[in-house]
Structures are given as C-alpha cells and as structure tokens.
Length: 195
Image 1 (spheres, rainbow, N blue to C red):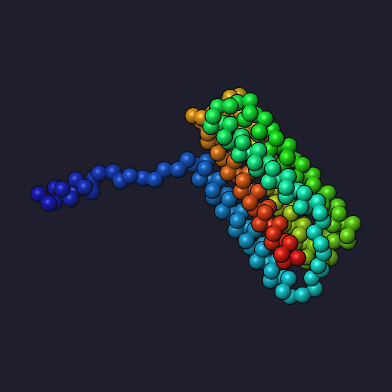
Image 2 (cartoon, helix red, strand yellow; image 1 turned 60 degrees about the horizontal axis):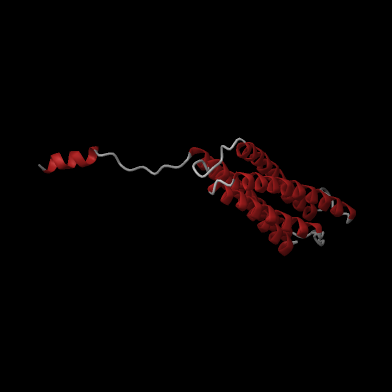
C-alpha cells in the first residue's frame, strides 16, 4: 500500500515556476549590463590607484542631463499607469515624452563631451578621460537601444495593442528604461566620487 502511494506521489506533476520568455531575456540582458559596468568600475578604481590620473571637474551639463533622464523615467511610469487604466491618449503622450527626453539626454551627453574637449580632456591621453568617455559612451549606446524599445512601444500604443489586458510590452519598456536611469545615477555618483 505504501509503495502504491509513493508511486502515485512520484507521478503527480510538480508545480513549475513560469516566467515570460521575453521578460526572462530582458533580465538576462540587464545582468550582463550590470556585469559590464561592474568590471569597468573595478578597472577604473584599479587604474586610478596606479597614479598618472588627471582630475577634472565634470561639466555642469551632466547634472542637467541627469535631471532630464529622471524626468523621462517619471514619464515612463506615467505611460505604464496609463496603460493599466486603458487611458490610450495619455499612454501615447507619456511614451512620446519619454522618447523626446531620451533624445534630449543623448544630445546633452554629446554637448558634455564637447565641453570636455574644450577643457582638454580627450578620449586618449589620460586614463581618467578615457574612462569617462567609455562610461558615458556605453551608457549612451544603451540609451539608444532603450529608444528603439520605446519606438516599438509607441507603435504598439498607437495600434491600441497595449492595454490593461496586455501589459507585457509596456512592462518590458518601463523596466529597461528605469534600469537605464538607475544605471546612469550610479555612474554619475561614481564619477563624481572617484574622479
């Protein structure tokens, strides 16, 4: 009798944890980005400790671009809440604002690079400048990928494919965009602290 119950228990299917494959891929991608920037941060600190390090003040425009990126995250959250409430017009406006603020952020980063060049801080020459350009350039590249994700979200919003019963695309977009915002805040504080 015990053997029959044991066999019966063994045959019952185990409950599996399920996750949306696209969300899983997103989280794997975010982990790789974290590892990339963690390795760069470590390399930065090791190289800085070796000496021959040019100290320079971060141009003011990077402060302003940080505010712009925070505002874009707020707009992205507005988009998410609008999708949950089926407020389609607000959803379109909020994603559009997020996209425009992302473009403004990129433009301000480029202007910041121009200010660095005016301060004689170049990509080559001193490792501190090189690291600054690499950090901001890598983040800028990921902002571009975030803007591409936003384009697909915007198209989906205009086709009314994003709504309270289909939130996957807006959830993925919002998660990635907020991640990029948090990543920039980390880089900004890191570069301010250890420059």
